Image (cartoon, rainbow, N blue to C red; front, side, top):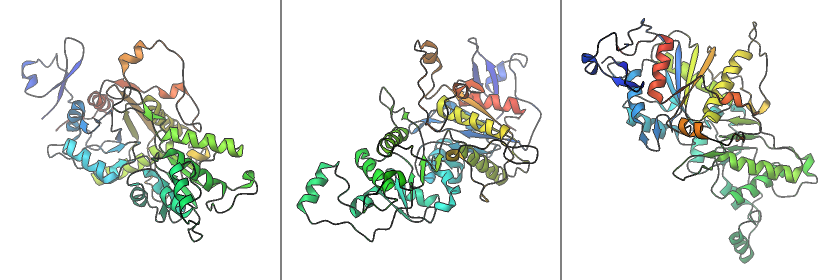
Length: 425
């Protein structure tokens, strides 16, 4: 079925099929019958919640949009990937998206906040503490970490540490407990999401950071302690759920950890890597994924442009604009990096990555999720409170998209018009 677009009396575009347009003259109804480009040189990245779905239910414009991407047999004609700051198992999210839209979705197409840590191979065989909630060790194993432990393991190995838990005070006082000297030193910390019991986790994390991963004796001087490598995934301060106001996200937990570490040591917590939107490594990994998907569906041309469709200007759009800046600034004529990224946001050189070919990224902001155009226009408070991570400089211009579209369907319309790409065969 060929899809057309028609303007209604309110100036809004409607979804029209061939049968719908039978009563509409061609002069009144612009049709996407543009020059055929069987091998696109672009890829599309979708945020999930607020763009394709709300909660567990797909959005109607997304159902219509995905149809535009497929051929008559339901196969994708354009390479796509799904980029979310959630910390789920990729095969679960792939199955969910596949069920929503009845299209093939591989777990490799789903990029969660921790996914780019696959590139940090120097830590994969170290003894790594994984902080998060459900499936955290399984997620870590899936991205390459082979030797992990949890906060609960630390608590069991060193029962006298968690004194913020008064129940544990009582338990320890009533029994015969001792440290486990054979418990291996923690060599790195992978923070994939906020834990359940913040107060206990904060205490134990500080203990590990002050003792180089072996909290059996206090340091002589906290200023002389070599800090453990920390990989933090997802810096979102808050997120929207069913409540009337935003809820604390993993970024809020990081703020607490940073404040405690600085108060105790007088020094800033040093992150080895920040991963997840809006950091550049996530978009580089997404480019790699798009290149791999393009190859899989038979595209031999290099991908030269990426489009990111998101609903959060301070995460999705900032990240897309940061990566566009990186693409434009990072290479000189001889291929060398012109302006390196800060250490915590650096992109490792890796043989696991497909060749970088993208020259530009555009960002499209939809109004079906976090961003609400009507509410934004009615705001009377012009104060600019920055919710981003301290290692990402506040630049309000980066939150401005290339284009605002009311939903993902109209986002694809814009992309296909830009690329002179035929909607359906």
